[in-house]
Length: 275
Image (cartoon, rainbow, N blue to C red; front, side):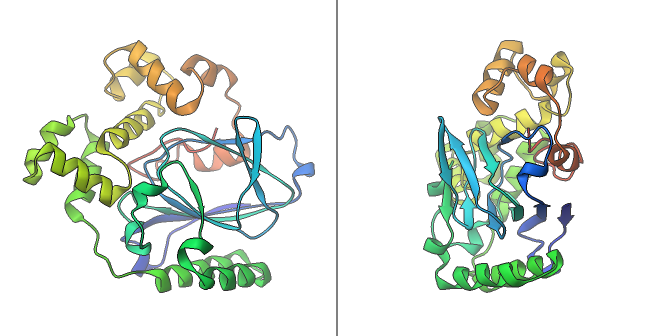
């Protein structure tokens, strides 16, 4: 079962959507393979209420905590189910996560952090209640209740939110963007990093690649992503996804997960999440 749920009204300013993945034992799936997750210019919070998930890094397998905050990703991550799947993923808007957490999110780049070490004992209680709640919609309600309690009251940096949207829609150079916000380039970079959790250069690279992933036509991908040439596109693609474009499209065989969540125009920041 896969679902995409819009957050309740009070959370919509900060959260783009809430995803539910629920599946029986992995042994019942055909042609199972690890899931590769691409950068999407967003921070995520994930809550595992079935069997633990495994992160695969350089041939090493690490069991994930039951509740994690995943910082902005600069390259893909690879995961594998380890039995029954039950996950609720909160996908924040690029600027939406910081008001819920007391530490600078740029410290979490490319990391999965145990939410219990950040949010305290309330996470233990949430995990226990997620185990006992029967229906998926009840579990989602528990997560939204938890997030409302965790809200720190910090305001969103609206200027940097506008800048993020502008960068997602155009190829305007960062040094050209900064003066429009009354900032020097260095001030703009520092403020953007604090609000979004990643540098504007990295953010721009991610959203450009995501635009390019919307097409399988190479010349069109180079143009839509604002790349200098095909070589630039190939280099960026491989550094982020771990594959060349040719290998990606040649081996592409979408899983049920990818078919449900990819290419549905659910965000101005990404087209492809799962490989």
